[in-house]
Length: 454
Image (cartoon, rainbow, N blue to C red; front, side):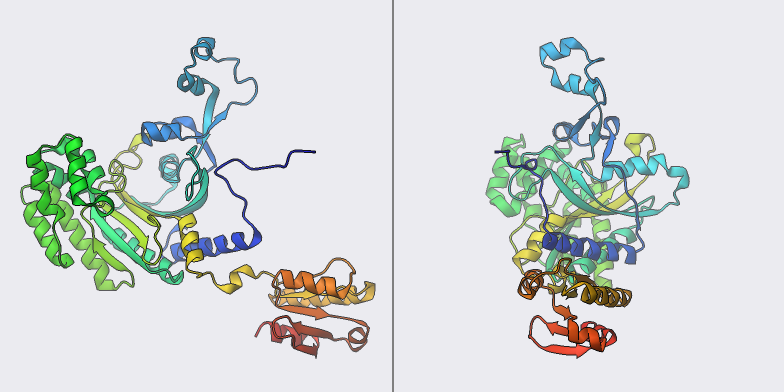
């Protein structure tokens, strides 16, 4: 017996219903991106490894899917590397290309490569799959989609306010209640500065980012393990304890960071973004979270994270400000800000809350039964008229028993079945059956179009 085919771990097949639901998410996000003036681009699935390597840190480099060179890829390889088992250096000789790890680095490459053709500020969106050689587990895949929107070539905080409005609009259309948390990288740098450990900003933020999960005592213990002195941990406590309305917390934060010029700039930026967004109105909950870090080595200003209120799941959207997106490709000084929607997690939230519109799973509106050569020919003419009117219609391809054809239509949740038999053929009409109510009407094609399109 032949072995049953399978797919690689961490990848998935999607059924017609699942694909329709995913497209509902993509279409919703894409429509809002366009509404806010973002233009679509696409980049290749594979990039030169020289573009990808060194952009995600040592761990990220290990998660890159590398593509073997074409032809005799071992011909020019250093045989001593094969014998010694030095896989990293060997891979560099065997592979010149890799699958993209995210959409951001390819976008940075795109901006530099096409800089003479771009009008800055440049607003782009991109909805494409990415690949990571990660260990597959629940909610983590080796192939998944990212939905990114970025503005490059502008330092204005109006961009952050616009992106927060955009996030609010997307989730409002999807009927998902969300909480948006914001922070600023400069505030985190200021915190590290005033407690006397600017060199340990990564250690500090990695620890305090877990505040909601493990509590302040465990955060303090981890800070000690990471080399912070008891005095420094003590100076951090008033910051972690800030509470009350947003304006009060911003004022308290400004007072605590009074000796840090960088920290105060971060507070000013937070104040401008939060107040500017609230003046426009927001349906989502918007809050300041001083413990929010999100990829500290990457972001340089505003940091954004979105979570669903009604489902226990991780971040479903995130992003922030970066000041040197293109610097790694020899084009420094280009600031940008962007967000990325997690389509797979959004799918899980919509499924858990049963929020997918019923019509997303319905493609065909009416199926014509096949009752013979002449009847099928008449059905084909009616089909053409219905499709011209924008109604999704099809015909059962084989002449089969009516019960089998009706069962097939029912299994696909097709709402109407059109029947042209001998009597209908003689009258130039069709019998239209509503598969939900069982009601039948003898009508011409125009009448059927009116009923189905109502």
